[in-house]
Length: 385
Image (cartoon, rainbow, N blue to C red):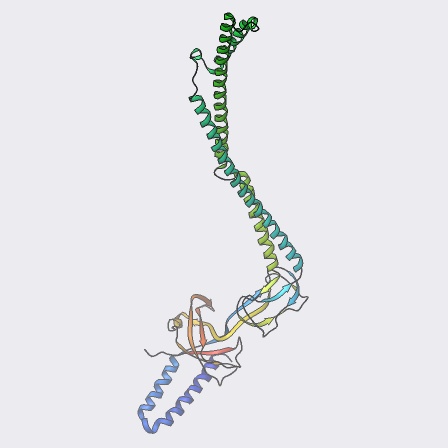
């Protein structure tokens, strides 16, 4: 039945209803009633009448992203599902799960290596700081000893090495001079003088050596401090940059590999993306599927809607949200259902040379005989202002 025949049939039926109503009330209203009927018929001719289709509240067509053979089907047509439910699985799952397990272990090892690098650095940092403190203490002690050392008068103006060398020469001379008398009587005056000179030379030599040792200790402590400070500067801001970059890159690479493995595993499952009903399924166990080919359709039948893309640009300006609509299904011509305009598309289509807009209408009434895709006749009601 084309749109003109539908409209004539609908208008004829409406006219009969109006005539019967006018006869029933003519005894009390007279000429006024007749005028009202005429006005109603005129309004009918001004109404916008278009065709539309019945659709569910929402629906999705689901497909796999990979090819494979169906190993499990968990639903059948008419089943109710929740978002996230597993609907269908493909084979080779054990291999994919093993790959994920290996990738998880790689991530764990990479993260552990990075953690160890950071922890080792913290230990090394603490040790480096401790080494600086020890070296500082040695420098302090060496400086204290050197600062509190009194240089003998006969070594003034000489550096420590020169003083040791000179005092060693004098000690050797004093020892040679004393040697012939060392076994003489202790009362021998010459022996006494030479022994005193030898003791003084030894004391001067000891002082020179002590001074030199103090300077060597200070120099060694300062060198140790410099080395500790260099190590501290190298380590204070974090682990070795090259090692850190390498460890972080390994973590990132293993995480990406894990994500890819998990995606491959997830792609072997088809899950519900909405709460709804299994409206259609085209598979059996053992079927071979291809990527992006629809295998199952889910629909939310909690409410029925009517969609029409037949409103022209001249008509759509007369349509408003919440506007009342009368809907007559082709399959149920005796049923007139109430509806409300829910949404008018902002985007146009070009259809047979006309600019048209899609309108979505919520069915306020329903009927258990309604089915997805049924054709309906839509009459937009003129709202009283």
